[in-house]
Length: 329
Image 1 (spheres, helix red, strand yellow):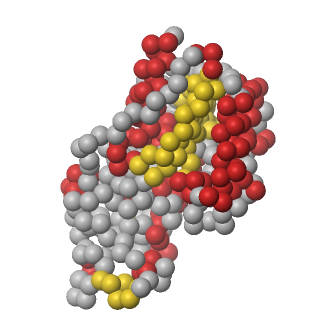
Image 2 (cartoon, one colour):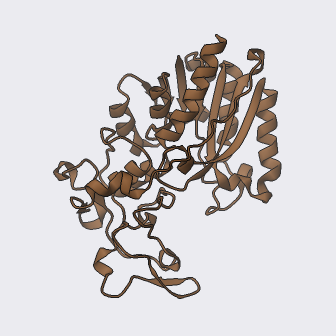
Image 3 (cartoon, helix red, strand yellow):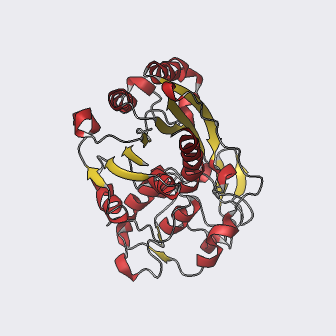
């Protein structure tokens, strides 16, 4: 079953869908820092590097489905909260434009939980209506990746739609009772990590495990305002797109409370506090070690990893879609 991928990033969602039996034949990504990573990991996929706003639908091949995560900065709780008024939020409309023109059997779109904020309720209802008016039976839900074999707390919203003439509705798969924690994912690579070079430039191929290097540099007062350490028997905090805000490695004790919005590293244990490496973040996101990230400055690596949809979460959604379509077609 062939699909197209919009706002593809480093390919987390594509990995999940390919594992479920789909094949990404065409993808679009505008960020030049990602191109090398996507092309090397998906050599059989055509990558269009233009802005989606400049691509007409007839330039895109026909496929059974469209997947993607339109840029979410404008919805993020940490952003300006302009929502659909922000040009980046409006890229959702390009997703819908292509959906209407191509009319595939299904679509899946992912976004941050910040779009559920009350101030965005009108914009959110508008987007739901646009999906429905495009001829799709819409299913919508907030999911936590930790319920789907991903070792982190990561809440994201998903829009999934089947074309109305199929006569079926997508039901989100139930999460798993058995969870995965940090010890299950990164324990075996805790002792062979290396720091980035000065100004956070990559060590290149000298890493003993690809991308297993961590960002150096100080920690902001915002970072130190709350605990950033999860224990080995807990899921990670959400892996973010900014390397300076990467969670700290579980080898360190929980940060010590001083007063509201102020914590410190436990005295005499300061040497244990380091950021998770790019590879550790990738594993927590459920990327396989063979999925290599290409960058000169490791901050670009953290960005690619943090912006991705966890492949495992993508897989369980894609697996359900595959089964529904196979039973219908």
